[in-house]
Image 1 (cartoon, rainbow, N blue to C red):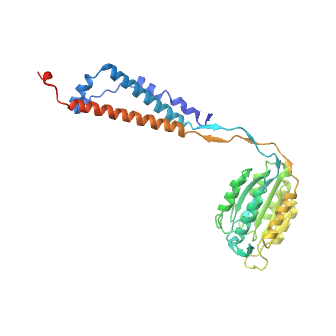
Image 2 (tube, rainbow, N blue to C red):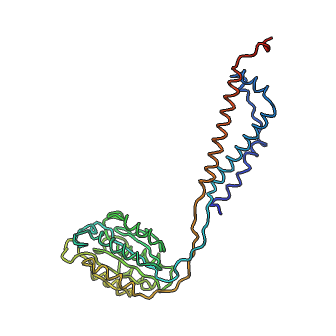
Image 3 (cartoon, rainbow, N blue to C red):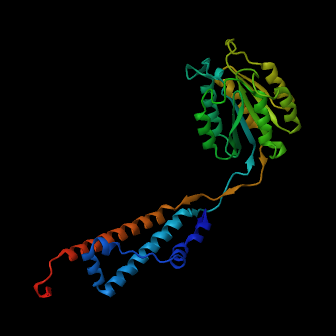
Length: 330
């Protein structure tokens, strides 16, 4: 059992401080507007009134304590789970420029867009990456990190599936994507820095030259595997294969031309053959939020308090309006 915001418990004495430090606020509203009810209240049994008062104080105290407890966000910590300690750090840099919407790839007997083919193959690829940490970069006119390196491959799959053409602009900033990948891998073990860069065009945006970025990647021990996506008969969106080959050669990676789904899958066979590395094991403890229990206790106490006050008010109101007995009239 733990709390995200335990400092909120410092507010527990607040009602007592208000009661003792602020001047007492007295009101005669009841006697002003309902003199009959006020007279009945004055003649009410002292012991019964004291019991009612104690009940109300108890309920209001429970309401305040439950409210503070819920606001402090109680959580239940599960047993520590050790994550896989071997594998590689892989960054996927996926081009989502406008040309990736062009449908010249064949998948399951029908023509699909380039981005649809990439998503399909990457989805299968991620399902086999147990033990690897995978991150996701999406780029167009600029490059943006969507998921840092993580073992949570389900989240990476979801972020990739939700990526839409044009989110990052219509240009193709290959150099910026490589530069951002280098930055994200800088603090990782030198032998586990791998970037898989997929594009269907040539560098047309951004501020970093792809070849210069590749040279920096080499000095930082980052291998870049480049993938040119698109059928060769599609001259509408030419791929700068020469630059992609240079990038892969400079960094010690490989270049792949993905004319179809089968060729696109080849790179994943190569990645599977890469030697895995032993890494420091990571642990995490699953958390379960429990705020709804004290919140439910607060609402229940508030309901009882309001119901009791309503019953008490109705009883006293009816008693004040009842006719006096003949013997009481003098």
